[in-house]
Image 1 (tube, rainbow, N blue to C red):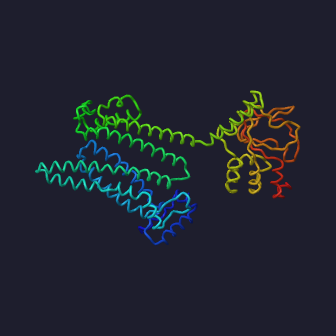
Image 2 (cartoon, rainbow, N blue to C red):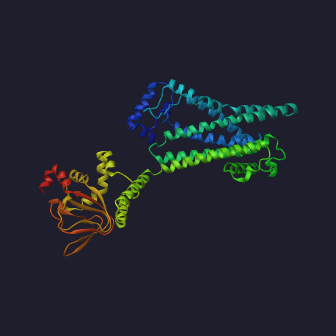
Image 3 (tube, rainbow, N blue to C red):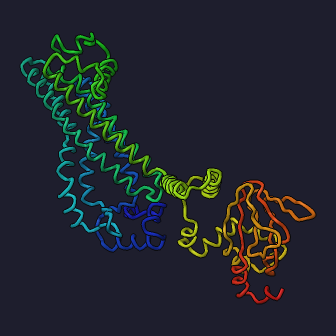
Length: 486
């Protein structure tokens, strides 16, 4: 029934955290056994958080606009949305007492009611209660009284002052920005935690939303302060002839002034005739500096963490260049070594042995089968062989890269390796003939009987090959006496 909605859902996020379907089911049983009304953080709560993020963001945009520009004429739809938002935030405070907590160090979500309550009361309860204060209801009630007393001028003036006070008081709802930040953190925790791209996207989006809100609030303040002073003759609104302009025009000018001050352009900073406006300009400049610092710091951190493999490659290449300079290697050889590393690693550093050692044996077999199986089956000796033998040989193959002009094997030299060409071209030369080999071909079969190479093989292009050494081949044969006899 409805309790199933409170349990952890079987999806990519929960599977990543708990490891398997069985573990997710055990988590469901653990929650059911507690016998109390608790919402699991991996339940459908994710969708609720996303809806609340949108509503909170709309609140943080609309509230300053309403107070600064609309002067109480926001319309029934916005007032209805305000009441709806206030109701949701009051419900959200109650739900936080019954929502499980994900912690960094704990292996499972905290579902104990007492621990959840203590944690919430110690941290975000007071800011959330302040942010959820039902100003929407008070405004509706006050406006109802205002319309009721329209025929009494003294009462009307008093109600107008009360309405203005309540509107200014409604600015406490901007404390919901703290809830928005926490919503972002919660989404990041229950999102595809194994996908760094998703987490990076959430961080960038939250950063730009915060910068947008800062600019938006500053733009509204630019107009709100002269409005409180009842637009003195030397204020910027009168200077720009905006007294009868539309809300869009006034808002555009407000944001323009705010941005000019925040990024420290000359416009706006020299245009502060009153001490109040001067303070606004100074606050704008300071907030702009902080915004710029946060933006640069976050952008630097994101870029630094964006491609660690490429960074590691550059670091290795830097050390290699120092080594080559110290050893005074000739420039031609240095260039060939640089080209080799580029061909071998493609500008991204990785430790192939470490990768193959850390994955499971089943995955290791699948990897080498995808890479090399077709190459091995081109060799007559390995055709129609037992699958287990082929897999054993595949695991012995070593990846190698040769550059154009490299002598891979020399004629009349004892063979210790056999080569399978994945990509590239080689030239096979003997005293009597020349022949080119390419993708899918092989050479060096003398390794099978420990003979000598019958030809010299030279790389014509960059060659990506897999090699099988005589020692590894003998190790593979040990477990398959039938193949050894053949």
